[in-house]
Image 1: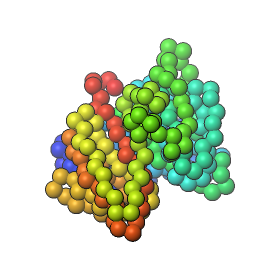
Image 2: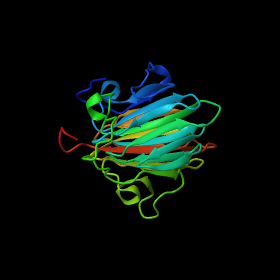
Image 3: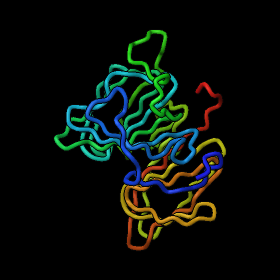
Length: 249
């Protein structure tokens, strides 16, 4: 892929190499969406596998928002001093600047989808591990069930629901034979994560067949037409990252 002119593409975590993230224990990550995989500028999406009682040590990202979705297993999220349990199918939101930790509590390894906006890329300059009183959280962390969507916008995580600045997440639920669109965003990149079922997608001049675990990346200004095949249902999430307004963000 031409990273200077990214195009809609499907990425599968199984096709990518894993790495051990900094400031974590018992964790293996695969970076699915990022500058080096699809040319993303506004989003980084990864899938982590974490063994019981392990996870992220206390840290904060002063200029990044972070969201995490519990694909499998259970966990415990602590952000800004607030401790909440995460069951399978729940999301957490951590605002920029909030000290947070995470650990898996289930006997089985936890599988977690993690979103950074803007991209993190294991950049040590984007992480602090010692509490700095000069850095204030830009909001309050929360754990949300996947059906806690805004009645006004249909969003699960955005400015209205949690005060997010750069990330938006909405649940995608498609019934047998239904269709919907992902409208182009000139101010954002979008990623469709398909958790269950099958979707036929048309993006640009390309046709894609999405299976469980697939990620469809839509660069800035690209939209997609989605169709759930007859006799099927599909569910997942549409993740949007707004293009940073300055290099410092």
